[in-house]
Length: 490
Image (tube, rainbow, N blue to C red; front, side, top):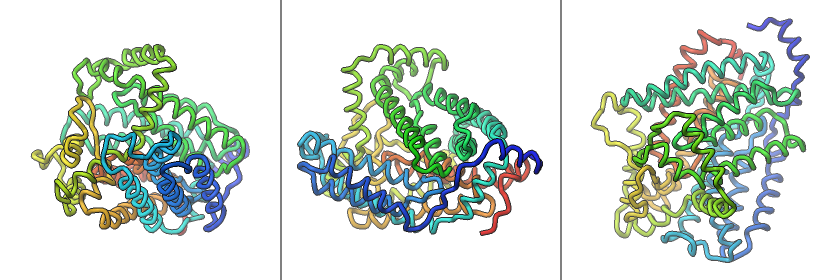
């Protein structure tokens, strides 16, 4: 435990950044309006102007409801990332002076895009409803705790959690009945990475060595796997920086833009090489497995990247844009359901909600989730039969298949409320209030920000993560680091 004198000396050597406590109805609406108008002026004019107008309207609604300065903007990221996925096909088509349906695989793209955008507005309303009002006392508690300990202490917490995560991840594939709980335990390392990043950013001394080392390690680990999930470290860093109250100084904006540019470049390069890379690391089996050691895989990845030329990168950019625009399978489902296949009347959602209460170790006969099979079933075979790739319908398309174009909005409102309540409990729960809650909410929700996620997998993953949070709060924190939960009044 850091003593009082040591703590004061440490804070004097590392002065905090000024805190910007959020004020309801303050600066967020004008800022969101300015962003939305700029987007419409750049990409709204064209054959799809009505859809573009709907898109920017939904952006204003969602951004105004979910922008909460001083808190980690997890709900805003979840909304805005999926808004981008729903809207990118509109602005791309306008730029090319094409109808939004002209460059798709078929299906009713106009209806799919419109329903997706309206669904995201319902999601934003639900999340705001579930999250409740903003909490200045939670922001102050998080900041105070981050500054009360040296950055080195936050780094060692992250280091220990990384070792636990590595062990859990290794054993997950050895004990099939416990895959989901062990993967949830492994994902908890992002809790401690977030706290390290936040504790670094609230100080005025700039980005220190400890954070740089942690970021580099996570980026390297993310690059070396079958899926190369390097996005997570960028997203968590972005959320920690936003929550730290840095504001929109030129330095902060430059850092944010640089982080986004690096992420885009990584995405384009990965899109260009992933097919050949996956074939190599899987040993040509087509399965989602890695049969080579880490250094061999990274060396192959470096060779593939080094061989890229301008043409390959241009083609990869186009493919990535189409991949991000996750509405085409929804469009195909609209053509197929209910004209050729009836609505499921809630069967998919019930399957998603009931699965976490049927652990495979007790229910070995529980059916395996096959995203590609489900997509083919409700689209008439649009996903094809590609080995080594899992193609999901996306959770919004699943709500349409379950409930139809009107009742799906109520289901999406419920899903948004569910996410909002998780956020609220993490930030203001008796055992998580403050910085620990900021970090837990990030670790639980950020892995599922994409529209392509099946709600069946998302609900199960979130439920497993919440169980892990409860176990850590109940048994881990009181024994090993009780100082993580200060006594903060509501």
